[in-house]
Image 1 (cartoon, rainbow, N blue to C red):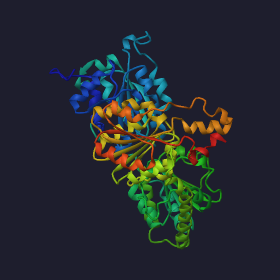
Image 2 (spheres, one colour):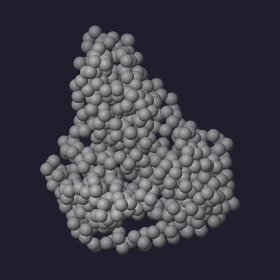
Image 3 (cartoon, rainbow, N blue to C red):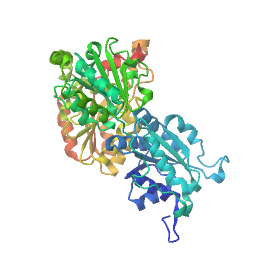
Image 4 (spheres, rainbow, N blue to C red):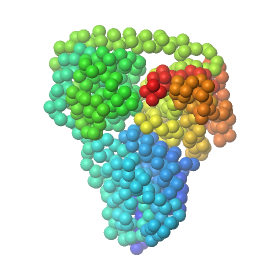
Length: 560
């Protein structure tokens, strides 16, 4: 119910006003009786309400919205199973350091502990996977609590918050003067820190003196919009750069400081390694892949991440954009010492890159059938344009793509992040295309990953959001299958990991999209172009070799 002439306002309308103040222009949701007053408020505030078919999709889409826009995303779900369905999306946002707010319904306070419909201890469940989780205690506090939740999203490294709102709190109306309604831009301070000036000077000195430096630009480079600062640093200081996660695309392919396939060689032989916005987690071998003889520097938004799992020589807590800019300024004009040998170092790394490409070149160009995954991801890489946002959702097939696909621009790579949650693809497509309709979205799915949230392909059709989707179809959960084969032998490699031969191209057509099947590698490129030209949500179903495994899959420590 909208505001009335007596100056009363409902909890749902207060929530919508707080969302508007934060700059939220869309919520992702699956309807439920506990939350509909928020919808009514969103209509009055001009906030778009996008309804999906599963709450996991809503939460992943809110995460994706934050990644693509730099503004927090928001998902609204009902109580009980609505909230539990969203748990995976919230957990993924936590590990990916993505700011989003999940709002969940709850039974009325008057029915507390009485067994009301869909009653669960949501806050207790959400507390371990959020930066902030709370119940809105009364209607007058609804907007205030929303702003509080958003503030917590940006404390240290970004992450998700959760609010549950009892039904009677949400539906009740209170005099406007009793409610605190935070004003846009007036309830959050800047969290940007340039780091300790002495540490910045020390890093500048290390970069000037190093003979074989290397830098890893991680997801926080994109989170802090540090593209320009990172680019200026690597070019000014002549430092070979590697990129992972959302940091991919910081430097364009072909840039003399852009390296991709020689990271292991660099980390084994560098005398200085600077790690920006990436924890020493499983992707980094918990820090063990860095040469013990190298000087290691870590830059991160979160103090708790710096030096975790591996000792470091220098740690800087701060915003990557400001820190890198300050380091460049401190180093400018005094590049000497080891800098004269940087050309030889870059040539050494470039030779390692060429060797890696040469080793897999036959597979990148293979005409074999079933299609080799390297041929598929090579075709996808050739297909991308400057405006293509690439989304990877899968296990083995996305591991293949990580070695080959190179986004042309910053912020144009999206993957689950370190939680490794399958099923982010369709929700990320939804968020990316809704937020940036000017961009082409290209998504690669494993057939297992697509199955988790694929029904929301219909949501993309319903909202008229075209994209080019590719399913690398080997009828298997191949990343797991490899581990089972390695551990238990070929006679037990097919236990619990084999899928049906599903024609996903027909699935796309049934739901109103474009679909096409490819079995000949020569047909991949033309099929992708036809999908682009269709102007519809699309799925190109590519049958790939089930017995080909990515090197990253075979090297996973869990299988050894």
